[in-house]
Image (cartoon, rainbow, N blue to C red):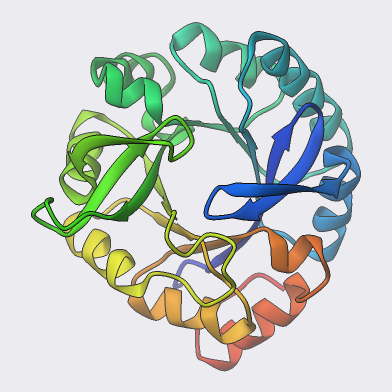
Length: 254
């Protein structure tokens, strides 16, 4: 039986509130993370992703508390990322109730941390989050960034994904900075390039504005589709996205 396409609301958390912007800037409040998580779970979300975009020490403690509260009230897998640096951070988040943990900047700074985490917990819990943008100097045309998209890492995003998989990540979350929050559609070229490079599950993020955009992302190679603003502000429901995917012939969990 074909694996169902997952529809995943993303909650970018800053100071215990969900925020959303455009191209990783111009942030505005979108609500309480635990309340939104409960609502999305009830609406049929397949998973939930929390990204602590401030990732300060106090923010990390807030995130653990938030994860624990969500784990008590929702019954879908939780992925948590932002500020994850080492095995100890992963351990704390898993103990708080996370099912998977995303890593980004720390892995670029020290790729060996991927190997260490994968050996300790298994690759099924480790998601490599790649905040990518178009960079003509990179062989693939796509470059990886760090610090929430603020700094170029000087790495080809597609080759970095390959290395992450070789080291043990079990899934890739591909965030397009160029399309983030624009509601103009996913970066289909970027998705297709990454799909051709790796075999692990690929989550596409950045740019969804209507239900057909999600279908396009899956056609391009995504195994899961992630979005924020269209769900937070009521443009689309999870059911509408799943209906569009099913109508296009893709399996979904109803």
